[in-house]
Image (cartoon, rainbow, N blue to C red; front, side):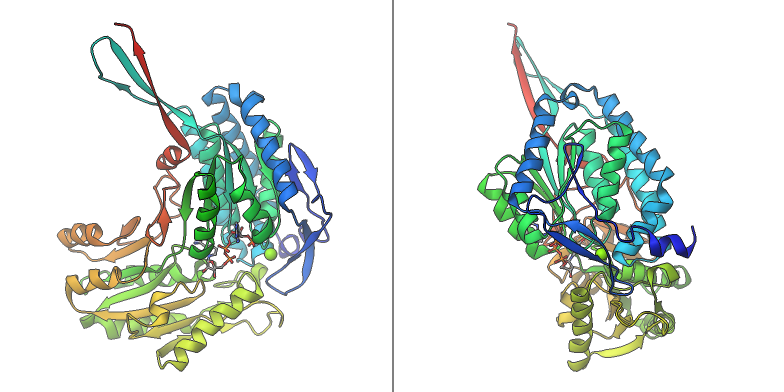
Length: 491
Ligand code: NAP
Ligand code: MG
């Protein structure tokens, strides 16, 4: 794929929602401009849905769940549809990568990596659909007891803008494998690939109404969806504050929720670690997707004897990082929107003002358009663990370094934020690997590595303010279904 495709894809297109297998404008006719973060220019538009559109979509998903062919389809056939969707995503991979990259500003290679992971989700859940089952339970004499895994029904998926295609895939893959129908509300800043993938699902043979997409603002479409009385389960990935609002909305109907929220994930580097192996991983963990990753490794804790050496090496690498337009495929792209750019810049300015030591700044490609949403990466050293920059999720290319003495302090620092999503531990000492991995409060812990290339198979989710419920792997299939117990009295 040339740069041409990546700049011109979707130019001028008025995208439609997909409701009951049909393209649908918002009932109000209102639209939202789609902006390219690389140059700040409008290049397409999406419908601005309100409560009435949500109602239409939920009705369609309800009908598909109760009465459509979906409800009678054997699990292996649902799996086959998911597998087919994965193959269509692979076939249309260049277009999807270009669309995602232009819509979110992420470098084109990241768009391609996202396509690969997305495809893998549908492949994984396609294979899993007929491999999850209930139990028979030893019970009283004269009885047989068994459990079934049943779908919740109509699931609402509220998706953020950072990895739209991948996050949709981990929700949709698990929801469909278990037999749910789905109403998805992507972020207004990044809805395009969700619309395309729902179109591909129709092409793959998904029955109408199984996969509905509504687009619009969170405060209108998102709020109406999470509070809708006919939604059976809500799954959300995004900010902790919005997560609270969505849980409150779902609580009115006492519905279950999966919450995949923020993080302030630590990597702990002990003095005996393989530093050469760690350095590129430490940088990538915060620079990938411009730091707009819930599991970004935004804190690096370094054992004192190697603090100077490691921080000097990291500073040298940070100084060379360049933010560039999505199709220039630089180290990182722009932030997703102007608000996010402003937030990240003000975090950096506030830390500088508070006297936190700046070890290095990367740069913005001088030929990048002036109106793009760029931020030069920042590396802060010897950060006070109580400082704002040490505690708050920045969601940008900002890394904080901390010095520690000994294992106990390392674990205490790692656990010293409100979050608990992912952690990294770098040491050659096998016993220490086990001890620290168990003591760190995080849903995933990587030892001598971080992130692990998509990790479709690996259960993922948070402790503390990072949320609850688990996605990815087989675990997601339990979140996307409920146990029914049946007891036969044949005595
Ligand atoms: P956000 O508010 O959490 O948005 C995520 C999704 O929720 C979007 O689809 C959004 O729609 C929707 N939404 C917003 N308000 C809603 C409501 N009241 N009811 C239902 N849905 C609602 O995130 P953001 O405002 O875009 O970004 C703010 C911060 O969130 C970032 O700076 C970052 O720290 C964090 N964030 C975290 C993740 C993550 O993966 N953990 C992802 C994204 C952002 P619209 O965007 O269309 O309004
Ligand atoms: Mg956009």
